[in-house]
Image 1: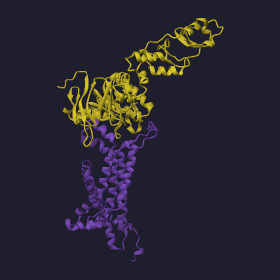
Image 2 (image 1 turned 180 degrees about the vertical axis):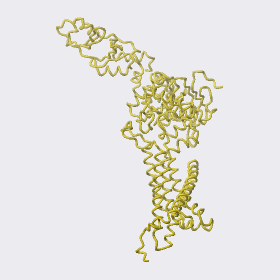
Image 3 (image 1 turned 180 degrees about the horizontal axis):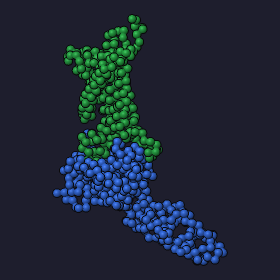
Image 4 (image 1 turned 45 degrees about the vertical axis):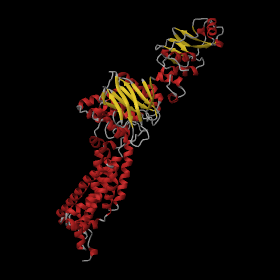
Length: 378
Length: 255
């Protein structure tokens, strides 16, 4: 009767929450499928019911209509506290228990499940390592921890009983941007290892783009406007609301999703250090620029301008100016764009991990990259 | 013999009556402990009802405030025709006086549990009763103990008045001295011991609180991981505890 495929972790079926006295439902007939092992971000302005939706999954809020299917089972068929012990939960200010040590906080759910003490202790140590928490912190109380550390402990606590599903409610909105970026990177790396099904509520579209496999954009009243991968959504927003919410820098945001690896590189105006200045001039005019990159032993030494070429026998005799930044294949096109607009040569130089020259990118290449990665809407 | 020549304390009398004084002190402690103990149990029930059914808090609080406002001498006297002389009327009155302080502090303590901590506890899968016992109660403890301190010190003082209805305790010693008119020693001994008892019990509760709430102890400088970011809970609890103690002390002067 639930008609679930094995790859679906959570399915929201006509899910509705009408608060008593509310003019209209906080969440209205929401249908959403959350595949196993994916991180799905619920995004939207305040009042869009994203947190209400999240809390209906672990029944901190009871739906007034519709069904939450978890792994093919109606969430209502279990007692709420048992359901919740099987679902990790991370909240905004971490919500650590101030009267318990960090270790006891992390061990909360295993203790509720009646695990033996040694098993809990071993699990706590394992999670401290996974989240890069100093073992000496485990004996402390949460008040002694920084906001970032508290949030790490909050994630460790949610993972303690190894639940297949993790719910995260604005987990990083209370920490400063630098810490936030680091915590987000950590979540990505943990997710690569653990492959949990994660539902993340955030009002920060950039966070959603960075973390999520799939984004669901909700409008006020819990109305689903669009679901899709960040790339799909940025490329083809379903309507004006989604387009507005994504912001007027959708193209730039898409650049952040595409890596240097994804686009063809050009060889660019490059000569060997042993080449003659005449050859260098020829390459310049061929490429329509007034500089060339100088390569020796497969590495790019830097670049020389047309005016620098005098009577020297080879290009290598001229002192090459260094490229200020070089980029590696895994880096985003957004970073490359930054390199392009801040360099004198108007290119981003891409090198292999062993610093060997691979190619370069111009603004045109980035524009091509966006168009090539899917049909543009314009 | 002129009263003026009578010293405040005749140590020989004290030496001769050590057993009696000791007996009075023990009785005083018993009367206080019974009053605060029963008052605590009743207040806890009232507090749970008040929190569970919020609309009851107004009427319950008002009732306790009325009890608190009755002059103690009048209440002791009024109870005699109903329940007779002795410990029973005394304890009824004493218990009545503890309720307001204990109730208000308990409710404020439970209200002070941070909502995100409650939500986390629910989200982890605590059943309601278990959350109350393992999360809400420990976090409300500083406020509850603040209430116990005020209630206990107040009760120690009131027990001396209760001797008028024949309860014994240090009040009996004081009455004895007052009856003699020209012999202040029992009055002084009774008063000093009563004050000392109040201080000792207060200190005892401070120690109990320190022992029972290790997370609120000030962290030594080398154990504070990030001094620039002293995160909320402990600091907030300090403020809450302070406010409560202050509020309670304000009411205490009315008894």
